[in-house]
Image: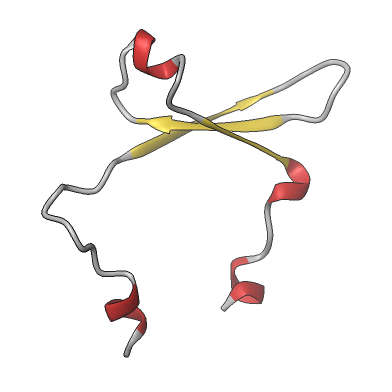
Length: 63
């Protein structure tokens, strides 16, 4: 099994395109909000991921 085999989709649905924004806070660390590109206001209320600075790792260290 190759890396490409492991990541191949199992459905015919197109991949979801994501967008992100960095949210700065005066009294807390900045966070990255990740959400579907082109999402409407109602969808944005329920379809997002928030990540803080210690949530990220170096890509090469995970390979």
